[in-house]
Image (tube, rainbow, N blue to C red; front, side):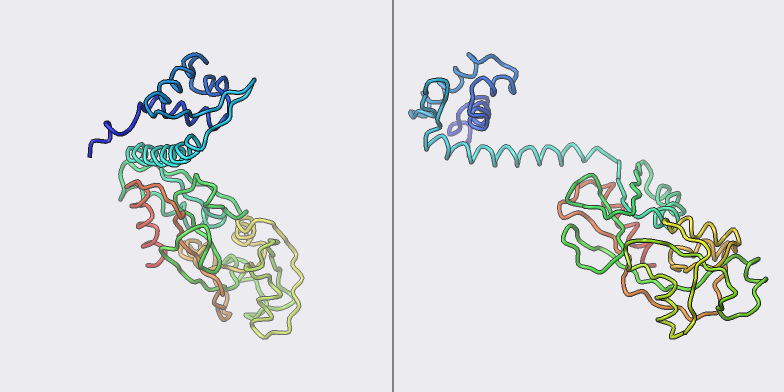
Length: 295
């Protein structure tokens, strides 16, 4: 279909949309970077071609006609769709992938795996956004998020999930100096103070174990990364989310105590925004992270 024969000048249509939005020839001219006279000519040409007035000129004001409002609504929607499509096309050449996660997940799980991710996806550029406050995927800017919680989520689509277990951990040196294999009041406990109570406190962990021990932490931190750093330094015992601390269990800087592991009620999820950027780089990175999380 030859749309050119049915559609007036695109310049005139863009001018109409701007004038209608601003309700002002002057403001539209400033936005479009032309003179007010040029805007007036475009509107006059459009009115002549359509055979209908678009605005009723009043003293220091203009009022759109019914025909103008009908056409303007369609133009606003169409231009928005075109702008979105242009953004998608432009992003095809962009290899930057932004990954959002908590500070602990970024530090303990993601960063050790980034070298392999980059080796297997040459040319990809990774940007990591680490924050403990919830990442709103609707706000844009994040291509992939790793979130701990219970699915589904209103702002994203889950493509992979993984559960975890919690077990007390400490340094080998601290473990060797303990008086008993069981947790007791003689132990030094390290607590993480967080508002998100999906992260168990020591007392809640003890309660789930059915023990009567009352824990009084000797060290408290507001970031889990600091809690684990203190445990690795021999400062006491911390609760270890195994998926996060497995690297330190593997390299021997942490050991798991002989206590029953407690499965977490929530899971780690790989999420994509409801309207993800359609780039090959983001797609490959998401698939790679999903496989890494669930393997």
